[in-house]
Amino acid sequence: MENRHFIRTIIEEDLRNKKHDVPVTRFPPEPNGFLHLGHARAIVMNHSLAKEYGGRFHLRFDDTNPVTEDALFVEGMKADIAWLGCHWDALYFASDYFETMYQRAMVLVKKGKAYVCDLTPEAIKETRGDLKNPGENSPYRERSIAENVRLFEGMRRGEYADGARVLRAKIDMASPNMNMRDPIIYRIQRGHHHNTGDAWCIYPMYDFAHPLEDAIEGITHSLCSLEFEDHRPLYDWFVKHCEMENIPRQIEFGKLLIANQITGKRHIRRLVEAGHVDGWDDPRLITLSGLRRRGVPPQAIHQFIKALGLPKSQGETDITMFYETVRDYLGLHARRVHAIINPVKVVITNYPEGQTETLDAPFHRDDETLGSRPVPFGRELYIERDDFIEHKPNKKWKRLALGEEVRLMHAYFIKAHDVIKDDQGIIQAIHCTYDKATRSGSGFNDRKPNGTIHFVEASHATPIEIRLFDELLKRDVDPDAPIETRIDPQSKRVVHGYLEAHATPHQGEAFQFTRLGYFAVDKDSDDQNIIVNRVVELKSSYKPKPGQK
Image (cartoon, rainbow, N blue to C red; front, side, top):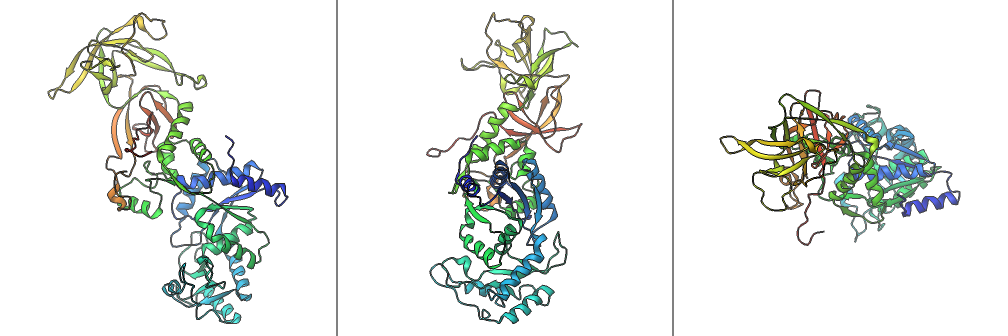
């Protein structure tokens, strides 16, 4: 799919004008949680744009806050990005440049463009002003260059307590852009860093570190979401006044927002710690690890991202649009097998006891390259309980009923003649006869059955645990209510059923359960206990309220 958008136009113009030989892009996550579907737009587009024009794609961890960051998140993000197929040409950490960034900050100090400020965080906030009123200059703004050099060196040596002093850029406290009102560059923050240990007790702020990192790495096009548009003048100011050799260009695009989904790291962490979800990779979350565990193929994520493009504006997308893309992809590529998730037994009373036979069935009727598999058939079978009703209610019922004949997919016609019930009146078995002359592929077309249903032969069936997922959050509650009160207790249901004998699913592989949906083997599975997750239903079950689209 060719996807035209404004960033591609900018890159092509820069290459045509010889501004750059090739584009160099990057994805710069902070390792303080796990990536989610919203991040996929930035990952896929940064990677694909670099590769399309013969350039380079960097993965860089903006690890400038040791208190919230962890090596666990670094490794998790690397696994997610690799799973997406967006392989990086170089791996960097902001912490690789801590010494360089300190020296560049000292350049600002010695040029009189940065000063050490002793105001408390609360006082800095109070004196910053607002959109209608200018800020107030700090009483420490006019410290001499020599004093600022001495104090900044003292900050690095750990001579002051956490929060006692900060380094601020000296720009303009009356600027209409709030980001330009003497922003903080460095703060004192003691904390063990996952990469540098205890070597530093001062850390650069994101707005200072990010443009320098881009310039150091030779990033040509620094793509970021729209909330950083107002930060662009500050980005350019730091690149210029820190005297960076390479000058990257920041370009903003609309963030991918998914309606009614949890993406905030602190919210997910709270749900994980309280046991409301089964970890960061719970299949009900739209974290990339959750989608991977659910069985979503990475190719479907690429299709979704490219179909949406890179808009300049920002708006929410419903999760059902994403799952429709997943469904379309799996419909073309997934193997199809028989499984029963709400079983009831069928006994073929005129089939020989102790005998089974093997039928042949394709894995995909429209893709012969996926091959075929043997399907056992015998006297006792399982069918879906919903595929049987004692008495046919109307002409629209096209499944099994007493006195009605249906085709068993890839097998024979059967006709129900009796049911066996327990003391509560629940059907335990359906007695049927079969017509040997109607074997699939025999060319028999003498009569028309009352529909076609699937089955699993009982003696060879593989017991499975099936996890059925719906949206984690209810749609009909106040979106501003605490997340814990919005959780749907029915968003995860566990049932038990049977899989056909020769399906041989692989962990993570998504495949279709005939007539039921797309499923994938969960990581909790083992040889004795196969667990599958429903990826998506065959058709969307979402029904908008009146007036909703």
